[in-house]
Length: 380
Image 1: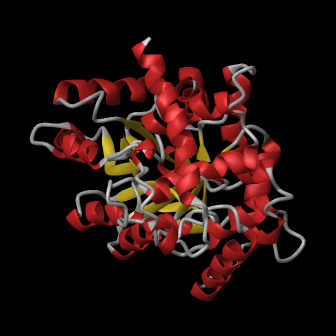
Image 2 (image 1 turned 180 degrees about the horizontal axis):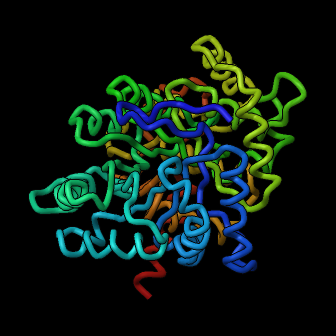
């Protein structure tokens, strides 16, 4: 295993992090806890969980494992999280942290995230006087947490806005070999500011392992596309921890094997990947962002096009895509939208800016139909 300093905290963490959101809930908590012990033995020292992960069992699974690893507590680093929309007063924030401590069976949390910032107003909610952030600072002074950090799905420029305020010790954000152009400004800003940087969704939410034939162009040697994607994130010096959701010991073995052999992706390597993506993903949005800020209706075109990639890769039905739209409206790529896809006026500015000449207007029309179906469901 290779290790890196987590920003300016002085904490050295494993380059591979254990993500506690992919447990097989058909197994017992004790069986799943064995995965953490196995990961520890493989050199993994960074363990990430949250309330509600895996039908709200993840923190309990962590607790079983951390009780058994108590003698190594000072060398292991555990995180949890809470959304500002759920806990925004000192009493509620403290109650949430104390509950996580009881479930994970530890006396303190090394990193605690202001969780799942999908829109900038949610960040502002967390930062208001007396709100979640100030409450977490108090809990840090009381010794219940060591470092206050943030988890976000915002785009690179918005992440950079947060970094510029210099309020956190680190950041967890979704970045991978397919979408790094979309968020790289944020990664660089955090790294240059001395923040710890943790990459979630390094396998694009499972998209790459499920479509290895499509993504075969990502590989250069005998590695698989999944291994190439992990190597991209693990080897980037701007990323301290690559968070992988593990379900089996074999998954852990693969990630650790990649880390042991990982060679750095240089700026030249990143440019090569960009060219490969443009050449090989001729129908998929590469997330370059050239269409950002050109829409007169303020539609977040890059996010909508990243979202539409799922349609092209998964062959989901309209019914499935409607549910997928609902999920992204609430949680991920489309949660910070300022206009709906069906508000497109077909001015063509986005298509003129697109380096891949994608049929953006047609795709927005299709997404717009899914959005209208959601509206119809709400009004029934």
